[in-house]
Length: 623
Image (cartoon, rainbow, N blue to C red; front, side):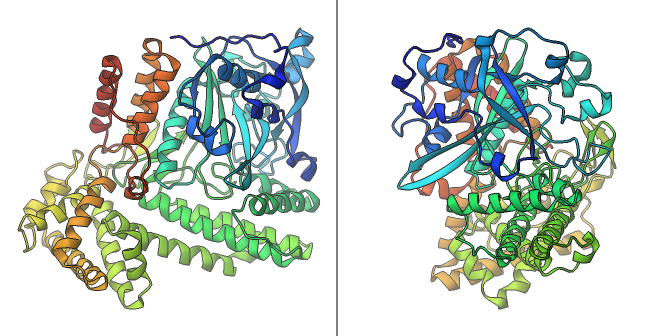
């Protein structure tokens, strides 16, 4: 494949490295000083045998980690810098107990954090022994980009079994890294996890959905990997919640103050006064973010197992830990992921979990301002929850109109006029009526959980309706034609019955749709025909027929890994980039002149891309 292998000899002149930024990433992190009891410290050793499978050039350039004009090509010095920085394994408690022999030359000088945070998998429910179970924080990287200094967090999954994993708690002993008898708790990560997360997170990022991103994947011969993730702030709500559960005021204050400082220094939040009022502002921003996140997940059919512990989500509402994250092709609102001894929340239930996370932050803000922790039940009617609900409802309105093909300026004009609200909500409710229709087959098991199949693809009708009207079908589309476009492969004959009630909904849907088009045409001064042409173009991309689902990405990932020896690392990275680009469904991305990767010229690459496209098409309606 041509992957440069790791050279364990220390470079004799590191100061002349063409990639000096990597030397910043050495385990140092300001969270150490802010929350001294918020982590377990580990010595680390170099891990041999790794090769760079993936490197995110676009992200590295955005961070300032590589020059802005660096080509999307791996070279031996870049691979060496990646491996020197991230191909690490912790020296854990098992190693110390069993006096594991480790050459001194392989042990790094600095120590690395496994951070503590709340996890519902742990029996104590207070975060006393939970947190990063197989990850370390590599540190942070700060660079000046476009005249602005920005700090990024970096952590690596698959670097060894820590004392904070559920396995250590269940087993009542320290775990040897790589012990196959304890599976997830062995401290390793699979390469499938890393590749799936890299593809999924890049698709989400370019489609405007906040998420961590994968910077690099280091692959090993046993199908394990070290998956390096980056974000401007990797703290989760769970990093705060364990402190409030333990009534640890000083550590909670240190964590929140640190978070506020990071957000303001990075320019993501404005400066806040150094007084108790800052915690109210902090809370309002959290409430707004989670209101939007809950709406985005629901409207975009994104399953992200949110729960009361605030573990599987970032504090800015971004996605982290892609192990169970999926984007569905249809509104499979009764799908539940099965995780050993429990089932997950559903897409529809995520809103209530997000609301409870905001409620917990209301408790935190009050605790920090007063010094007294009140029971969580006292915050059920807190004003921050009204902010959450208002943001959630407005975001759902906006996203419903966006999926229909209206642009951002048109959406703002509609939403900001109170007289339009009943019409917008009526349209939203009619969309949800069709999305909620389920198969008569009932609930059944799938590979990783249970579900009840949705039978209609709303995106299909939103894509085809403006085209039909433009083709001269100025009258309403017949119920038979409407349902024929809307139906999915999950629908049986009984499911598609055109009852009087369903005929009425089809008629109402088109009436409301046309009224929205008419109002926007009036606002913009365009004819309805001109507006429909633009809507058809936008909706055709937004509601693209071959959209990647969670099922599709599993098969795409498997195909990429199986074919890895047929390509150089650089070529494989280009294939991944090209696949991601095909799944960018946001017109604004292309309107802003984003560069396209161009066509594949290599025959093997073209054939693999065709295979990936066929997989996406076959799985378009799945989970």
